[in-house]
Length: 86
Image 1 (tube, one colour):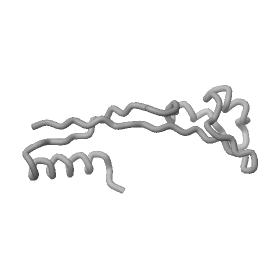
Image 2 (spheres, one colour):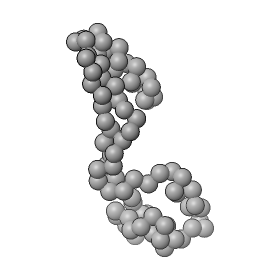
Image 3 (cartoon, rainbow, N blue to C red):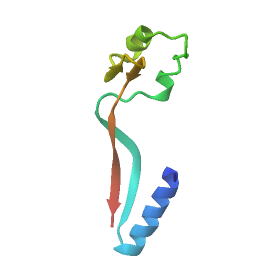
């Protein structure tokens, strides 16, 4: 998998060669469905120690709850902005 920097560089070079336009992904992304949970907010979870009720208390209700496997699912969709210049 390519890094974001490699993809951005590729797009800049490709757009420069094609139509004289430049397309650059902007690092800012916006959550459009659900609530994004940053990694720093889940560091409190300790496998085998943290209870489900503690997770729900901190993160809120999950999108789905699979009781068979004892899994809480938190789902969100984010959108990345693009800059197009000429």
